[in-house]
Image 1 (cartoon, rainbow, N blue to C red):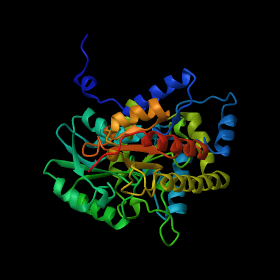
Image 2: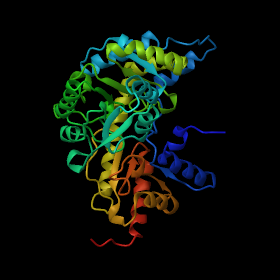
Image 3: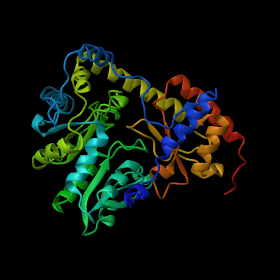
Image 4: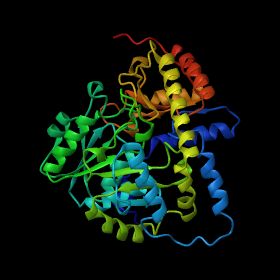
Length: 395
């Protein structure tokens, strides 16, 4: 029987392949430290876990509206107002089965065959595969340490073509952990808006980003571009990865489109998870998330201090997502071989750059510092010992 061309063309997600290999080693009794997956080790806030126990009391849990329960959409709108000072109409918020579903719907609603979607190199691999799935064309804009591996106005203009239909931006970014300066982000959105292109902005890690110099929280793109399509999630700041709940903030013209597509593609997000997620916005849950943010900052400092002066080089210090994009070229190994050997010899799982990039595919690996502090200390020790066994590379 015939498989679709799409099935043949889709690339593997190497982070998951590394994770599967690590799981196999663990089942054989070996102690593996997994820094390959962006999954906080905290688990959902206590108030959310308790709310889930309450909602699973045997009550009927029918389908919710396709765009989610009104209470949760209102809670998210209040979160934007209280945390970011931005007014968002709850009617413009769509609740989805994770941020992945929100991205899928956004691209389904805006991408036709041949439409170009411009994004940074490196970027999250699933974004590229979703564009391809709808017949779109991915246009990768080159980045460098000078732009913190982020899209810039200059790269945007250099990469733009007459077929550009959308710009997909992630700030903070996976895999680099870096953010785009607000005025640069606003300028890129303005350029795209003037050229009648969609702005799809991934803000999944926004609430983990470093505060501004004046102590204010990181700005949402909605402060500059209220008609951008914003993708967010309960997975990272709220540590609810396996709960699979996300949302999109939509321009008014896309709300009804999202609703129709949601009905056909997903029906609705999980009913009990939606009701439990209301507790994520309680004062106690938000305080817990803020304390975890501080802990993640301390973990980042710990890992960067260990890497400083080693052959594992960090050219752009992260300021948002809990990732460090590490240049391993000074070890003499390409990124895939480095990850394979680090797993086999040091029992540390990392993700090769080929998941995220073309230019840095063979030179960089991604490390997630969302693991426990104890695991990070042990992983850094193991990696240091592993790198010490590699021959010196002469320039």
